[in-house]
Amino acid sequence: MDFELSDEQQMISETARRFADEVITPRVRDNDRAARFDRELASKLGEIGYLGAPVSRDYGGQALGYVDYGLIVEQIGRADSAARTVVSVQTSLVSGSIDRWGSEQQKQRWLPKLCSGESLGCFGLTEPDTGSDAANLRTRATKIDGGWKISGAKMWISLGNVADLALIFAQTDPEKAHRGLACFLVPTASEGFSSQEIHGKLGLRASDTASLGLDGVELPDEALLGEVGDGFKVAMSALDSGRYSVAAGCVGICDGCVDASVEYATTRKQFNVPLARFQLVQAMIADMVVRRDAARMLVLRAGLLKDAGKPNTSETSVAKLYASESAVECANLAIQVHGGAGYVDDFPVERYLRDARVTTLYEGTSQIQKLIIARAATGIDAMRP
View 1 (cartoon, rainbow, N blue to C red):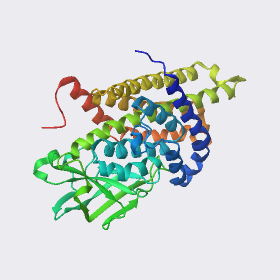
View 2: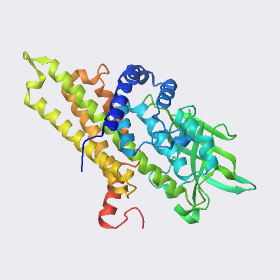
View 3: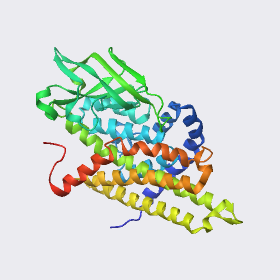
View 4: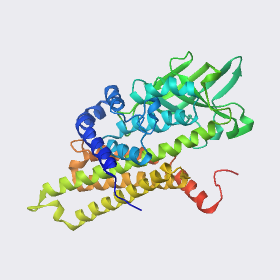
């Protein structure tokens, strides 16, 4: 296997890094302090083509491969996980699902606006009482003349307050469990649809997070994404893509931790020598480098499999598990290298730790990833009776 990036991929990575340094980084601390969602930045991400990188050019995307997409997400994640969340949700969960499962009419209606950043989307799967157990959603979709009526609630929905479109997963027949799930394209301006901002988050403070309410929202038949019963497959395919994106963003966090720690350790002096002269400081930086490089290789493997159209659920879970846990560990080590200076937001490492922590929870917790990995290894599904 050739681990060298092509000239085009190198350019993609360098361009994304430059965009992140010049456009995203100057906004990060103020947005984080104010817990402010930066709609202007979201539009800029669309203008440069980062909100629909793998989507066909016919619908406003860039038609890039997943390895290319991962390189972009890594650089955005290195600068700001809140901005990376916009890219991940918009691209992997929303646009990717419509691109794969949508009708031509649905693609033409929604994808160009989503890819350009003119419209934002959210992914309504998680509920107040249902996280990993997606087959037992309480949101109900009832068939009516010419369409559907949906009632229920969603929780922890990224971009939920600012989205123009919500992908809402609902149960059409509880007795069918996961075979009764359906996914609907719900304009957030629909009567009966509401959202409420979730405050007090540990990290991702500049990322919009919402609880959603659906009180008898009526939709036409053409709002159904795929067929009745496809909802579980839509959700799982979206999460495969979303986990890849989260993993790539976590590589960016690891890389940011290495860069910040090397710069600090080589310029900060104690006992008249740079911190980098101390063996235990070097050991912490070495641990970060190893975790970053290993996570990057695992993300690359998953991306290559995706681009080849080969099964990759287990490999993507491996990448997500290792990269997310490594991001937390690298951020913790980076704070240790910085000492007291790392505990305040004059340096990015304290934000890296706060933002990294949630990556071990959403898109499937680390424990769920282990069950997926072990299922592939043993052939036994621990999540089903």
